[in-house]
Image (cartoon, rainbow, N blue to C red; front, side, top):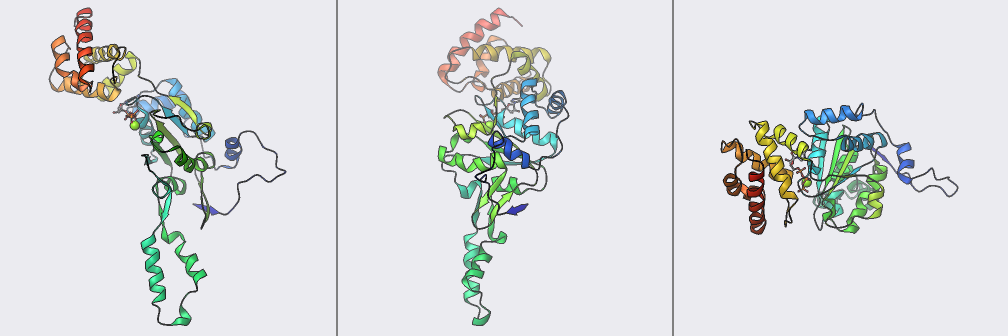
Length: 329
Ligand SMILES: Nc1ncnc2c1ncn2[C@@H]1O[C@H](COP(=O)(O)OP(=O)(O)OP(=O)(O)O)[C@@H](O)[C@H]1O
Ligand SMILES: [Mg+2]
């Protein structure tokens, strides 16, 4: 960790060198590239069980080279969180996760002072019998606002880490727009300002992933600092591959049928479309039940694994009946 009290404001006469983030990255301790090329990254993701296309791998590759965070947006269950976990697995970097929720504040996201310990320290000092040996207030203040009394939370933890880190800021759209501001300094300059201590700057740049279900519009300031990646439902071929990779014992035929049925359900007007996680749950169940091929009855009996609303299940049952008739197994 580096603690410095430098100011980050550009001096009045200083020429701006393009984008703020680009200027910052010129000063950042950018390490060796983590990935040799986009195809290599894609292959390594596959090795840890994450199936990506070149577009996705390209964004992660660039994020590393440009030292920029990735904002991953898309419907539920499309692999946003899993992407960060997979990158952490394949690089061997520690995953530090900040799970966002409404009401998340600085004390839970960045750092807080250990008030109990500070109080104890003050009490011990005032109980020192020898008055001459008692620390003055200034000395005491310096002491209780030092490293020893600091409780680090995920964002600061990631900045201070000396080992490689993947920082996952999960479901960032759940925090209030004001709270987003806590992230801005970290996302562009990889540093945290602590008034009592100075500025903590990263000595290695973490790979940062922010995920969002798009329940609200994120601020322009946040978006500007990130590379954007939209993860939608996969194609039939990719979902089939995901099922084959994640569901032991499934046959190619069944994986194909599962992917096709799920695809057709996603084209219906439903309250909630099935996500990849639900496809996987369904496929695992079919394997457990010893089913080699989905017929109308099996589909009807197991649709509750894919869909979570009664009206959706009814709509889907009709579609499955038609689909299984169209393509008999
Ligand atoms: N490209 C992929 N390759 C392999 N597995 C995938 C892929 N995409 C999704 N999955 C699987 O789908 C499941 C759901 O993924 P994940 O939890 O990352 O979704 P999410 O987008 O974060 O959803 P939410 O918005 O609900 O948090 C996981 O079990 C993951 O393994
Ligand atoms: Mg998630």
